[in-house]
Image 1: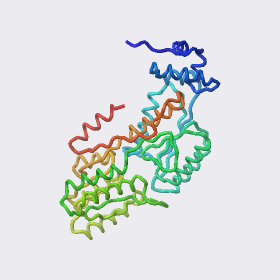
Image 2: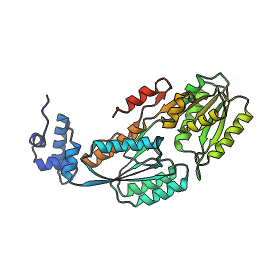
Image 3: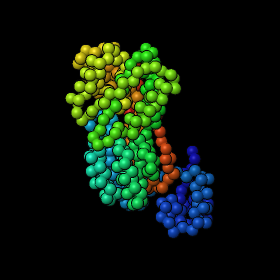
Image 4: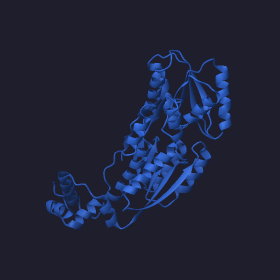
Length: 356
């Protein structure tokens, strides 16, 4: 068994005092460049891994961390991200953390703007952001940059910002995959209805735009001749969806395939079941409770999983380790995309629950 390297051992090897090593490990300053270089060489040589729990206790301080994401609902996508965040806090239970959560309506730019303005001046050590409105996110991030407050993105990243890290699916690749899957189970030249969420005060979310671009690029690259019908989809006004769907099926003799670019495929599945419409192939995003139920019933053919729990867990873990031990950070963290079917969903959920 390899002997654990202690701070006193590092001090002896570097020819400095224990206090100097401690200041380097905790980034406290007041260390000469010569001493810092000597210590860092020893740390690299012995592959030193600091104990984040001991480091946090020794610092005798608490950390104020703010989380802002779209609203959370039971069994939905954003609840999974928050579950991952809470799981990370359980792992670091010895660290004193003051967690504040602020949510907003992801389909209403004014709700997001109000929430971001509220937290911009909030006292905090770090921030986790679920960004869905680019301009509002950029404005918030500029204020964080001015205050030297680190922030991490979950679900997506936004250009013109400088996050410490982000944890997200590659949404372009996701759309590319969705096109490949749906065209493999429908006839050539069959119509494909793409449902794209509409929002108050702004265009579709960046994630949706990237997925649609990946989808259409796949069709173009592979010279697919499918007719694409883009249908608006409203989460805030469900009665509008009834109208959109009725118009779609009245105007088209056949709709062999439906693609939902967000996690709300269960709404479409419910409509098809209520109206006794059969034979429609469907693919959508995320293992929400309602989507999984529709998948098991055969109403949805494929779900694309993007590991939301993993995103939340490692966003919080990354922030804590950065705050406490100033460890190296990998900025770009694209999560695995999983293709979930009726046949493998139970295994996937069991496996995913014990991954981290």
